[in-house]
Amino acid sequence: MSAVLLFWSVLIAQLLIVMAMGLAVFRLIRGPRAQDRILAIDTVYVNAMLLLVTLGIRTGSVLYFEAALVIGLLGFVATLALAKFLMRGEVIE
Image 1 (cartoon, rainbow, N blue to C red):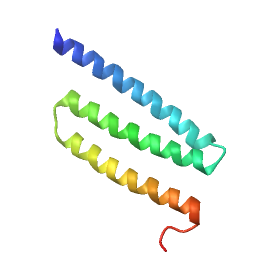
Image 2 (image 1 turned 60 degrees about the vertical axis):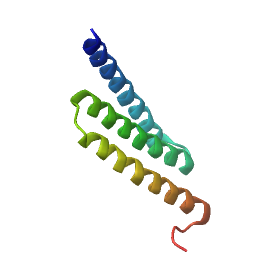
Image 3 (image 1 turned 120 degrees about the vertical axis):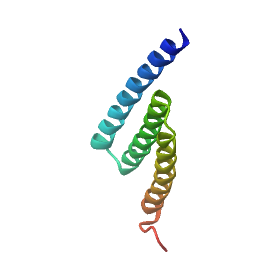
Image 4 (image 1 turned 180 degrees about the vertical axis):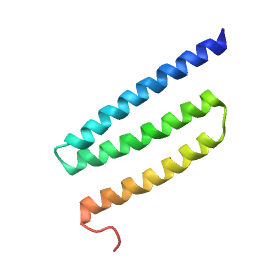
């Protein structure tokens, strides 16, 4: 019973994450300001990271967790760089 419950809960979570990613991509395309687009990129990479984690839970492979960690680190640095670019106009001083 618990294996079936785990399967369906992970499947539903993956579907909801894909739906959230689609809405974030919509905001990325349609966002009226650059700040909205940066937040949408941030949301897309967090959703991609969560999708990899749920895929790792579903398959039982450690590789997906490591890929999610790399996406999280690179996404955080990219968000900081874009925010600094919006505030000052340059990334490297």
